[in-house]
Length: 321
View 1 (cartoon, rainbow, N blue to C red):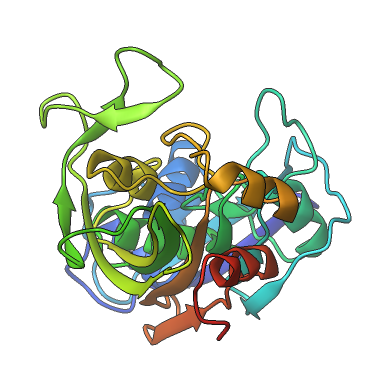
View 2 (cartoon, rainbow, N blue to C red):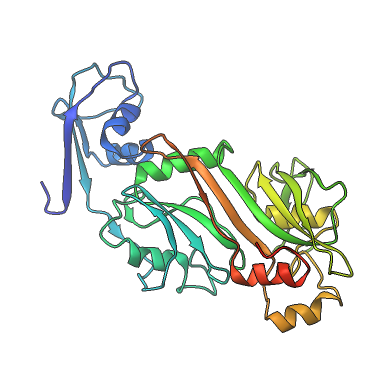
């Protein structure tokens, strides 16, 4: 055994299952990770290198998996304060502040949520795809605040990704819109893809060109002091597309206040936003619920409205609670 390997040994508990699934069930690794280790010759059945992932070994067949130490992440760990709502050995839920980029990219190579998570989770990451990194299964925009779930293990990453893919994740956003939607509640359907006019923007496109997207909204409060009309809206996402809430609300004539991409700041709002120093779209990921990939329990988390957004709502005539 190499000095940097972990050996997982046991027997196949149930016959008739594909090898990758059977080993994933007992090892805590994802099926994709099992397949990759098989390709590297690191999986053995009854002392012999395992063959195809689709093989269905008999119950009681002994196995060995040699897992190399996870390679270090390319991003640097940075001591950036985090608001952790929940954490266990498998995942954590973070309440992200507005202004924090989720993932390093051109223009934001450090100072991101990933950099902060690498520091916070040092020594706890078992490796996502063989790399010691946090498993980012969904993102929220830099200037959107609120809840984000992050995987610590390969298996948790796969389990969460599956729920996002089948749209079973519960997500609710609070948004402050220009104007008051009529009707007060409804559903916006429309595929979302890259804009033909600006590749940095998303837009409603034909179903064949973009990804199917559905947003359910309801008005929580009409902000009466706003002469141009404004409302506090709750949006529940049936799908999760890039900029979905922002694009869908703009498409029905109610762009988010402060959104520099999909809206236009009105003359009524400019002095208020300047006085408050409010420099982001008025959007907050307030609720997040999912099936815990390890315990299979349903978990649900909420995030209070951040101070800057709550102040804006009150200034526009909304309730202070």
